[in-house]
Amino acid sequence: MAYAREALELARSSRSGYVARRLRALCDEFGPLSRDIRVAELGAEIAMLGTPWREG
Image (tube, rainbow, N blue to C red; front, side):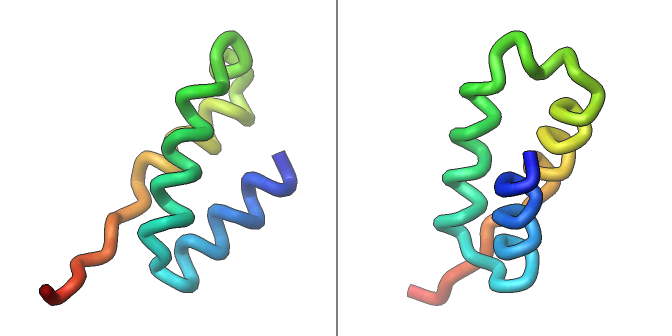
């Protein structure tokens, strides 16, 4: 959980689309753990991450 929270803060501060995508992939791996309130809250925070818009 601590590493995921650190990665979440990194994604927010750097607006890294790569980190956000990796965190979303992590949510897919939660499985039965997603019933834990702390994991569910983390998943909700990850879901709120925006993917940065890049100019082509």
